[in-house]
Image (cartoon, rainbow, N blue to C red; front, side, top):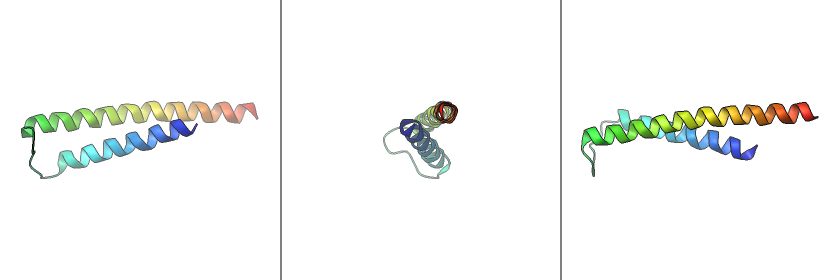
Amino acid sequence: MSLSKSVVVVSFWAASVSFMLYIAPYDAIILSSNQMNEVLLAIFGAGISSLGVGLIEYCHHKNKLENSE
């Protein structure tokens, strides 16, 4: 159950930070602007998908624990 909570929190932060960096007016340092935008969008997509999986796992474990009592 704590692993599911951790996955939800970390994926939320990853998606949030990557989205904030995507809309921020900073220049890319190592990559070109287009490459950096693609990387940030990929991290955002991965964060959102793992957030969904984490929420599903958390709800499943929560319901399982409630039903066993």
